[in-house]
Image 1 (cartoon, one colour):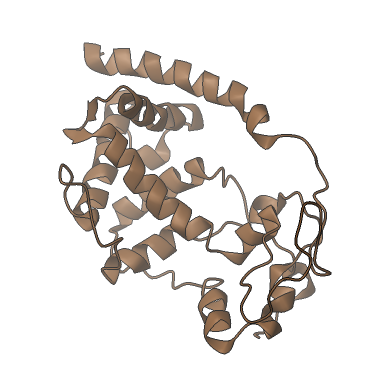
Image 2 (cartoon, helix red, strand yellow):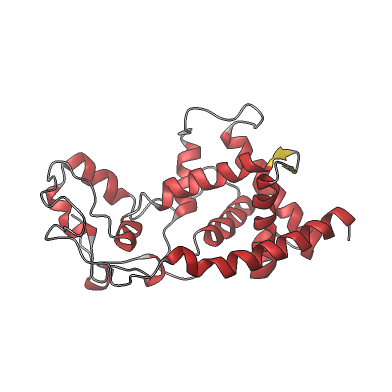
Length: 238
């Protein structure tokens, strides 16, 4: 395994997590070579753009940082992983029949975010104030919930595109595994201590028993209210 400095162990996105001290990579020596190689490569994907333009990269990074609450370092390189995937043509092997192929859909929807941002604040999406940026994205989700279109595309399919690619990248990264306490691949090591509250020696107890979903509801309610206001402004052309 490549050298890791002491301060690069048990890393989580923005240093947040419910499993203090848990480091999934402490068990990397027990994984088979192919699995270890695949996972370790995610720690340092190439930062050179292969698919996105500079403008698209800015919009995509702002979008993914918002969706995954990555408001500081260390950040999981979600957009770099999506960029590499799209450049290699590694899609899910299908797309909705009322949407273009994934590569074109990404370009079209990122351009749509910039177009909304121009109408709202006269600037690119990545340069909008945080509140306006959140409202623009929340509006897409709300339109999808209502079965409506956004920029001539079905909004719920747009939301699916962003979240499918974003979640596949974010939750494949070892730092996200540290955050959620996921102990990594089971093969060939396996698990012995099965059952509720039963842990392997390398697992860590959750240090915070509160429900993380309930604590986010006030924020989501505020974003929905801002989205509805933004929707009326855009429809009125103001």
